[in-house]
Amino acid sequence: MKGKLDKRLVSAWKKGQEVANEVIAAERRERLRSLSVEEAMSEFAALCEIWEASPKDGDFAALDRAQAAFLVARREKFDIASRHRRMHGQSL
Image 1 (cartoon, rainbow, N blue to C red):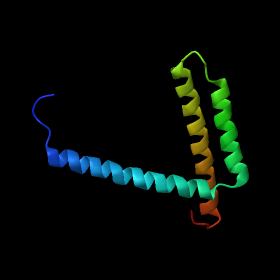
Image 2: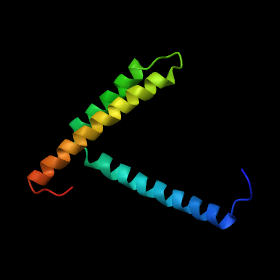
Image 3: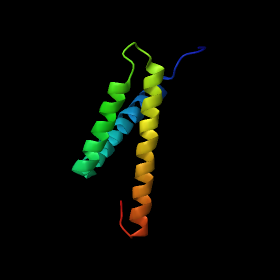
């Protein structure tokens, strides 16, 4: 890398990251609180399946693929729930 980093810009970036982390943590807490027992158990079971199916020999690429599949499936469920709420006039 050429040149020096601007201390003020680095400090502002770091502060922004801290704020973003706080927002993400708050959103995560709210999302977890909103889950029904069945939804929470379903996500926990899916995570356990990923763990059990993950290779124990350090093949992290396979684990990444399993995690990606889990996240896509979860996103699809959220999209379906969101469409359902909009159709029935419920807010998120």
